[in-house]
Length: 623
Ligand code: AGP
Image (cartoon, rainbow, N blue to C red; front, side, top):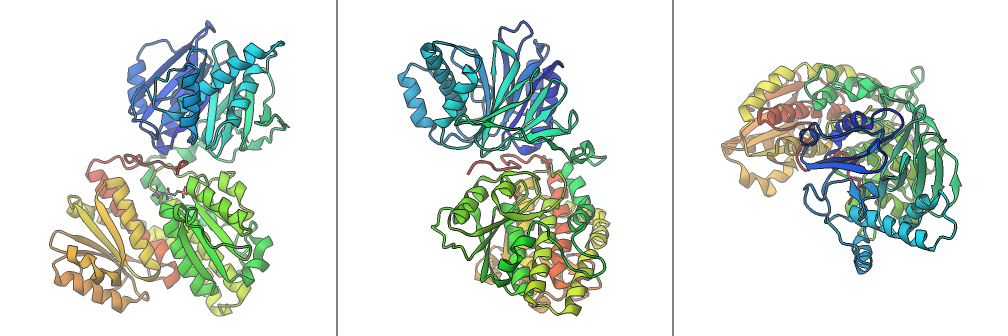
């Protein structure tokens, strides 16, 4: 979703902003813009354009881009279409100030009405311009009423205006009369401040900052920072309480956000999965005793061991991981698990009490619906835990405890390594909870730990099949629909396989529990319809074989994911992809790999932008 980048210091701001916007492209956007305070210190020059950052660059051409303070933005349209006028930055009505904004101002229409009554004329359809004018209006009112104008007037105006706002925001505001500083504030949308030598960087995430500094501050909700290149950072809450800056060390490396020789981030991230799973497991399984230690969950183990149920809340791919978690935790730890779409949970008047444990799963840790659902769980007294990838993200700060997936930055919009590391954490949860509740005997427990440790090597074996999967992709690239079928722990894999295909190739795809096929989707099957079936051993294999027969009898074209050495399905299916033998609970971590690769190759063959699919955002910070 929208991306923010800003710079103040003594370097030229323009190249830093452009590079920053390029680093933020992965978040998903449909227009881009920058504003700079020019060196003569008296005006703000703004360039914005619908389309990609490359379109913005072309539009700017040889125009003036001097200045060592500026703001840049990639917009994912919410209020009004992605055109030049609606793009950010938005200037104040008199051109003195300029603002970039992420998030949604929910009460924007009532604020707009009041401002219109005061004579403000809006140029754009956006809620962000309303916020800019509101800040300007407060500033002008304060200026008129203030007998003794101090340097804090603009700072205070931003603060006071933000008190009027209902909704989410991350903003940076510049003032054309002050080229030494700008202001940044957040609520519900992430914002990171990078501290250099007499310079500051601000961004929606660390990717535009990483190459300049490793000293960062994660601004908290309802905090406003004044960033003056000649002074220490100054932070106040919107109700005017001074806060000290919590400066942290950024642990990411620049390599982790670059393609490293791969054609696309998605391919790199698919191939990184053996390593990312090693990172997820690192230090969490005692090599001598096989005991699982989850630092962020340890304090809540007595509550977990007596819990009647767990509720998992998540969206999209993370919800699919949650569904796998349900199978794993119910099977191994015998705790009742309910998996809910966060967007449904938050509005359904959910039954949740202080006896419940609510686990939020989110790669970004910023998904608006998941955050809102968590708040409801907290209000009702539930213990909240998170499974997140992004360190310091909003969900990790909202929950009482939890476990990081340590997948490293995931830049491709379609989740791959984030998903498999979420499933890995859920396996750790299921096994640890089974230890606490004594539901799995020692022999089976040790066997499962060995199976888990073997996953990275087994994924490598599946990745070796990339070339043959590409050949299969070539045969199916022109299909208009796909059906994905699986049972048990592989039913959510059918859903995830279908989601991967539709989000990056724009082919319509559905995932179904294999047995449900005859209750409806079977009507779709003809010679044109490709069906992907996960038919691995030990997971209701014979039942799945029957489902495959039903598909074949109706002329469907079959791609089957089978266990190595399989002969039965091989004799029926048109194409088989073999994955190594493994324990049933482990299969999803292997069976998803060929489906990720299949989607990747099909999307590429159809000329799609696999890393930045149309209309999608990496981090969905609006509901
Ligand atoms: C995954 O490929 C999607 N891009 C999307 O479904 C994603 O999983 C969903 O938006 C949830 O995001 P989160 O994990 O950051 O909360």
